[in-house]
Amino acid sequence: MTRIVRVGAAQMGPIQREHTREQVVERLISLLHRGADERCDLVVYPELALTTFFPRWFVDDITTADHWYETSMPNVATQPLFDEAKRLGIGFCLGYALMEGGHRWNVQTLVERDGTIVGTFKKVHIPGHEEHEPDRPFQHAERYYLEPSPDGFGVWEAFGGRVGMMICNDRRWPESYREMGLQGVELILCGYNTPLHYAPDPSQDPLQGFHNSLVMQSGAYQNGTFVVGVAKGGVEEGVPSLCESRIIAPSGEVLAAAETDGDELIAADCDLDWCRQYTGTLFDFDRYRRPEVYTRITSQRGVHIPGAT
Amino acid sequence: MTRIVRVGAAQMGPIQREHTREQVVERLISLLHRGADERCDLVVYPELALTTFFPRWFVDDITTADHWYETSMPNVATQPLFDEAKRLGIGFCLGYALMEGGHRWNVQTLVERDGTIVGTFKKVHIPGHEEHEPDRPFQHAERYYLEPSPDGFGVWEAFGGRVGMMICNDRRWPESYREMGLQGVELILCGYNTPLHYAPDPSQDPLQGFHNSLVMQSGAYQNGTFVVGVAKGGVEEGVPSLCESRIIAPSGEVLAAAETDGDELIAADCDLDWCRQYTGTLFDFDRYRRPEVYTRITSQRGVHIPGAT
Image 1 (cartoon, rainbow over the protein chains, first blue to last red):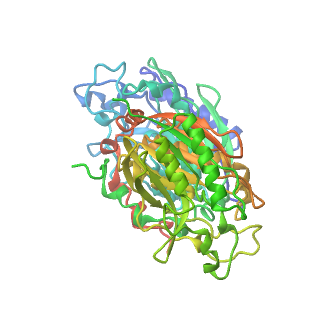
Image 2 (cartoon, rainbow over the protein chains, first blue to last red; image 1 turned 45 degrees about the horizontal axis):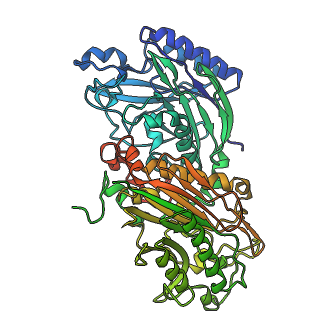
Image 3 (spheres, rainbow over the protein chains, first blue to last red; image 1 turned 90 degrees about the vertical axis):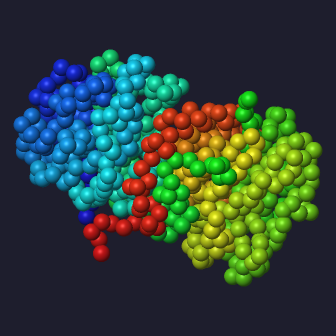
């Protein structure tokens, strides 16, 4: 039995502040149709795919930003996407901000080909800052607007395999991939919004594309899993942001790469049995891992310099 | 105060079975002199730098292989290297097999510029197999000949910074870098012997160079540390092995790369203060890590598929 999942990475160009949910959902459906043309089983959208990246602005009263969050999924604005995907028999993964029981989350929802919701993942590693930092050319106040997930990384049975999710900054942390690898993940879906300018250390600016690909390729290889990285990029509200969406094999090789900085669908056949060539050999965790000497990874958060007081 | 350490990666071509320790030490001293010409503070030699990669042969009586192990360091054969390094004021890191109290280890010893031994690291992740596998074109019986370290990864104050070590297969495991990163490592020294042919999955053969660089570059970036990867390569006893030694910056960028498959010294200035541009910003572990949701990493060795019995 073949386990080939044809995956489309639906990269998006910018969503400006004045764009409505309805306008954005039209773009999502247009990308879905490109996915249908490509015979995709699954189309993956970016992080915060329904709105602009609103943490770039600080507001003193956070409730004035509530309109950036969804309060249910599907909802009136996104129902046409759910309907059209079900009609076409294509699953999808959608990133958005969710307000739920007084909590504010950065989430991705995975939907199967028959329209059922598989699961909703909450972002674990929230980057940026908590307070207004007026010296920055733009804010990255994700830690003000969005809570870190208390749940960590899960893996869901879907699309004939085991699917995990992560969001943006999660991809820079090897623990993200490993937590999913230890649950047998075969396909990781990751949306991102990554400004090209990193205010705390601008020497990293020209390396954004390199770092993006480096962490996803190594995470794929070291856990024997496909990784699908999908950007919302281009110049959004004056902020140039990384595109360079990628579909990466368990070998770490890039199978498909976006070439534009706008709405673009790239696709690849992901043969989930390829994973075993890594997880069954070099990365047979049960045979080769040494958790008894990894204790610092869970017993401490920050750096402890030996001998320092 | 500048904290620039000039590091030389002393790649070696093959060591054949009939080469004596004395012949090899002559080559090590020759590489040390190239390091002196390059004004190096520290010269890093490969894994098993005193002998051929003997785990490629299986012997039923392991004691007949005892001659591949050192029983003390320095010893008669290596004393000239220690003497010459001290005379030149150059530190070094040397990989070899060590027999100690009935244990067989794969180790690296780090020596300061004044000749004092800083520490000896034992390899943590032993790859390959335990039993004779006669169907392979050559054996990789490291798990027969060498015990995994019970000690894990340490970091030593040396060369004006915090230095860690790992050996060969350790570099493929993100936990290796992270354990050292959590101790504030700034410079990781890694020797390797990597056959180009991987019998359990030959589809990986053409990717050996890519994987080698991928894991070291991502490990450097994700922990904000320099990584020095040093090969013994070329065709050793008929087995083609990877060269491609590298000195990698905390940005993940390759600062120096070997171009030959023989004895070759490459060098780079490693400004240890560069590490802070990563460990003080994006990878400020204390601010951004989430160990409370990494629990699988230490609580289980192998894959546990959720819901599976």
